[in-house]
Length: 123
Length: 324
Image 1 (cartoon, one colour):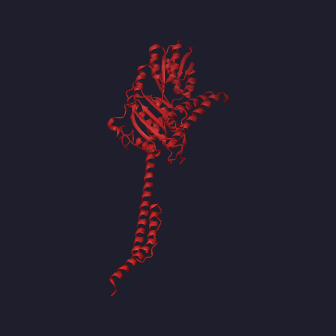
Image 2: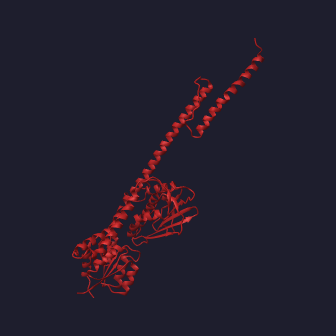
Image 3: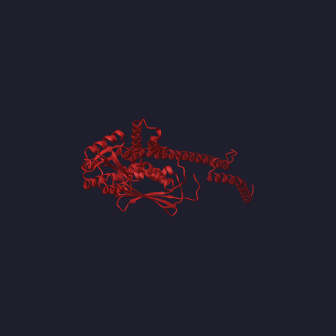
C-alpha cells in the first residue's frame, strides 16, 4: 500500500491539529501554521495533497493553490473555509482545487481527503 | 390751617421713617432672592398678609420662586428623559451592530465547533482504547469549548446594557475587546489587520464597554468598505494607539474607497448610511460620536494615504479626575 504525503496548513492551532490527525489516517501528514512555511515545505518536499485553510496571512490558501498549480501539477489541493465567497469558489475551481466548508466532522473530512487523493497518482 | 411748609417738613420726615422701616424687610426679600439665585428654590419671603406693597412684593417673590422651582423640576425631568432616550439609542445601535455581527460570530463558533465535532466522532471509533489514550483529544475538546465560551462571553458583554461608568483602563483594552468580536471575521474577509500599540501608555479614564462599541462600529465600517472593493484589490486595516499630549489617540484606517466629499458632512448624522438596505442602520457613527463626546473626546474622519477612510478617536487621559 502506498503512503500518501499530505501537507496540512492552518493558522488555527486546534483546527490544524485535528485535520492533521485525520490526514494521518491516510499517510504521512505534516503541518504548517502559515502560508510562508507551507511554501518552503512545498519547495523542499513533494506532497500528494495539500489541505489548507483559505484565509491566512499571505500567502493564503488560494495563493498556495496557484503556486502548486504552477510548480507541482501532480499535487492535489483541498481548501477549507467557513467563509467562501462566490468569487472564491470559481477561483478554487480554476485552480483545480476542491473546497470543504466548515464546520465539518470527521466523516466529511475523510470523504473529502479520500476524494481528493483518488484523483492523485501515488508516487 | 397748618403752615404748608410745616406739613412738607413733616412728610419728608415721614418718608424718611418709612424708608427706614422698609429697609430690613427689603433686606429679607433680597436674601430670599439671593437664595433662589443660588438654587435654593424652597426659600420664601415672610408675609404679613396685610396687602400693603411690601406684602405684595413678598407674594410676587414667592410666586416667582414657586414658578422657577416648577420649571427647574420640569427641566430636570426632561433631562432625565433625554438621557434615558440617549441610553436607549446607544443600546439600540449596539444591538443593531450585534445583529450585523451575527454571521461573523457564527463563523467564529464554527472553528472550535469543527474541532469538537471531529474529535467527538473519533473517540468512539477507538472505544477499546483507555481514557488515558484519549487525553490529547479530550484536551483539544476542552480548549475548543473554552474558546466557544470566550466568544459567547464577549458577545454577552457587548450586548449588555449598562450605564456610563468610567474607570481606569488600559487604552488598548476596548480595542482588544472589539477585535475579539470582529478579528476572525476581518481575517475571513481576506483583510490584513495591522495593529500598533505604543509602549507604556498611561491608563485612561473611560468606559471600556462604550469605547468597545465605538471600535466595533469603526471596524465594521472598515470591513464593509473593503468588502465593496474588487476581488483582487488589497484589503488592509491599520490601527494605531498612541499618546497625543493629554489624550490617547486611536487611528483606524482602511484601504477602501474612502468617504465621498459630499458625504463627509453627513456621516455623523443619525440614520445617514451609504450601505445597502438592511446592511446599515446609520446609527453607528452618530452613536460613536456621542460616546466619544461623553468621554470629553472627539471623533474625526479624514483620508488615509491610500485614499481610504481614516477615523481618529481622541480621548482625554484625565489623570487628575476621580473615577465615576
